[in-house]
Figure 1 (cartoon, rainbow over the protein chains, first blue to last red):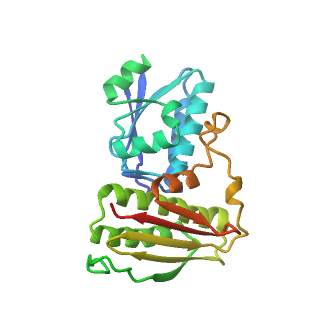
Figure 2 (figure 1 turned 30 degrees about the horizontal axis):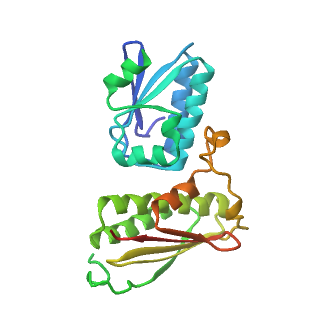
Figure 3 (figure 1 turned 45 degrees about the vertical axis):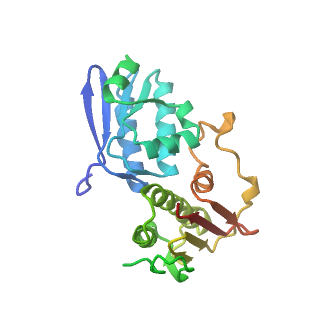
Length: 119
Length: 144
């Protein structure tokens, strides 16, 4: 949207889409809604979407962002796709562990291992 | 800003404020509280915990408590000293039954996109209690 700073950058790598969060804080509901909208549009264009979400820049995350990830994950599964998370900081990984979402999402150490995991 | 108690461990000053039902104002206040914790020498881990819990608690007050009604406000009392940070948040909503919140880690709720805020507050703070009516939350985080 005009005048709004990008929150994510999407690139293509070996058949998968890599989504890099540009912001440090995944807190703002407006940002989260925009990410959800952008990624929804992206996966609607694919039959079996493969998405790698790169969390390297993310330092803070709210439960609203977790909700967005769950909705995205379910939409990708509905389209017979797969989603992986990577380069998650220790403190953010702990959020996934506490909420047991580490059992739902595939979480990898690096973008390379995430790509390999989706292959 | 220095730690309110000069790092001597006395009970910090209780600060009271009302903020509008607006996340921008809520985050500005959260930043002030977090800055005080940093000034008191809290570790990055403890600061992360306070920040996360504040985000969730203030969001709950604004979204679920006051239902984003601009005519309502959120009352916040807090004190931060070298020993602990204590925060009390009161909204003007109808409240809720905090004992009746579904467990978001139960198998049947694991893929539900909502309902993790209170769980995160409880996980990251040392003490979290709700008033009987459910429109007041008091949270404590010890330093270290």
